Image 1 (cartoon, rainbow, N blue to C red):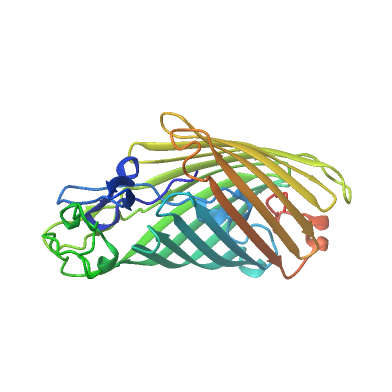
Image 2 (image 1 turned 60 degrees about the vertical axis):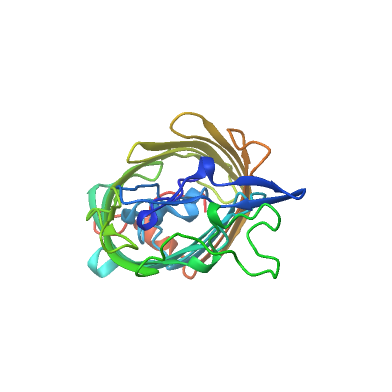
Length: 355
């Protein structure tokens, strides 16, 4: 499963202890354990599993790299069988402006953790400049600026001192039991952020590096403490076999590596496309264990590209989490084969993709 953001503002959402069963009158009560402290907290950024439908999220140097104006929509429901799941959305638009050899894009991310207990929204813009370094090679440089807002729905939290052995978290009248936990001074926090990246590619391969949180923002729900969001790094690489003719078989092995403050994930996989049919398989390794196996199927016809995948949890959450469902939809508004045919060093070189 992808790297999930867990540090949010001095509220440590600890996944290994996040679901606690309390047997009260033969009823099992589930709660999220929120530990309030003033130490430095950190976590991992969200990453979608559909690599070619979320490449600008990993690396802004891919902005506009398809050479076509496109809209991409992503949806992910992670751990649906857990009492509190993680649901994420992304909408992005990017295009290439050939007169200035640049790609321009905008995006919005929405992440709901714990059924909306913790909500984060990110709105940003991306820029890419392409340098043709040879007839069939290009080097892209990208930057990203975003504004982030995180909201805590305090009224939806439940704490240990609210547990009544007879009635659970509520009193006999159904009202929530009181808690000694102090309400933060502010339940909404905002901050700005920067990212950067580069990608080198030809028509048969690519290799890229992205860096997130260059400014290491400091954010907190409390006035007397702040959590630093650590920089994150991601590497991307892939090669393409086949293609060249309409409806020809294309095989694309790839690898993604992400690391952030001691937590790393490696995703290795393969896409296979024949005519309009797309298939994929990937294995995800976290820092210490194999975590997921992803199966993907999709269609790519004209301006419409669609893919669905399911992550099977094979690590500590095997049989408990329900895996993850992910859907991506891409609309391309223009196809310009003439540019790829002339392929001069003064024109843009499209980055290879199975979509």
